[in-house]
Amino acid sequence: MRCAARIALIALLASACGSDGGSSRGVTVTDSAGVHLVTSMAPAWSDGNGWRVDATPVLSIGDASQVDAVLLVEVAGARILGDGRLAVANGADRAVLFFTAKGARDGRLGGDGSGPGEFRAVSLIGLRNDSLVLWDAQLDRATIAPLDGGTSRILLIGKGDTTSASRFGFAPVDLFEDGALLLAGRTGASSNDQGGVRRDPVPLRRAGWDGTIGRQLAVVPGSENIVASGPGFVTVFERPFGHRTHTIAAGNELLVSTGDFDGVMLFDSLGTLKAIWRLDRARRAVSPSDVEAVTERRTQQLNQLPPEYAEAIHAVVKDIGFPTVLPPFDAILRDATGATWLRNDVGPVLRDSIPRTWTVLDSTGRWLGEVTVPPRVEVQQITKDRILGVWRDDDDVEHLRLYRLRR
Image (cartoon, rainbow, N blue to C red; front, side, top):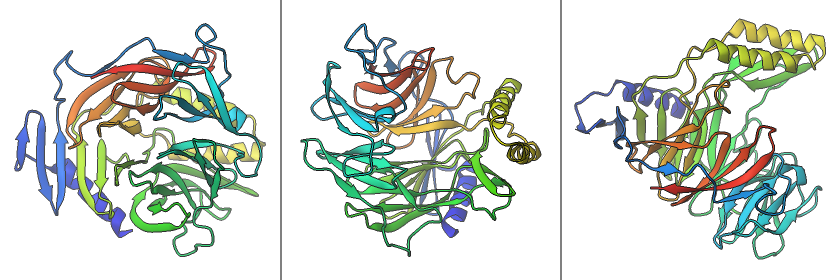
């Protein structure tokens, strides 16, 4: 836990940094114990001079008025391939569906099953050279799928490795530029765990293409969860409005946010904390309507459970209460130019009803400005001039959409 403690200390230093270092318009830069601290108080873009996303997509898949209709359900990752085609992990099919650059169907990979090239649950982690990297959380294995139609290869992460295992194992969350997998320790609960709020330490590691777990990069506080237990059961679920931990690869480095402050931490390829990029701005308060929305949803879910389970969960949630401010953001992505995008959290009431804004940081961590994305779009990938996302209509039908990004 020494690494996690050091992160907490550095975060405090970042929040207290002053004007004793270099500064420019709206930005203060200092150094502390070898860590580069960049604090932005205002965006660099002036009004009307930032990047923007067109409101109308250039391509929509799942829209029968444009191309042959295709049913997309529980999409878990999508990418633009090097030849312009699109790949989308479609949960309903337990398969990856391919489309041409104009949206026509162009084959599929996988299907329901546990054999090679089959899935029980499929998510698209990334693209390495000429292969897709896919993850099956139910079968607890990765699949390396060549795009040329070659034989898929199963990858068992850390099989037989007990020295580096986390409590609930590891799952791949991203790919480094050199092709190695970024692994994050999974969290969960055991039958003897006490109820209440918990943030498990999450180890972050690399893994090679043989499944071997490599060196530890960092140990960070995981997302804030609630554990509820009773006779014969235990469950763990996300704390409403609690701290969320986000982790992505940045080239061969690592970007992490734990929600303890508005910003991200940059680790180098050896796992050394290299920089903290912080935004000095007001946080959005948790509104009474936000609390009402999550309470109503939880009540509906608890009504489906046996009474003794529902009562135990209700009791622990009531005892914990709610935070007073929302997390600073609820998603993090890195675009093809090296800029970091942070999706600003607006709470459950507004989440699907308004265009979402993303805070953009340049490759040095300075705040460039805000980019607005059309409402109900879950962004999957950002290139130099395109945004690929999954849009849901008013009936929650999913469409794969491609928007033009104007820089």
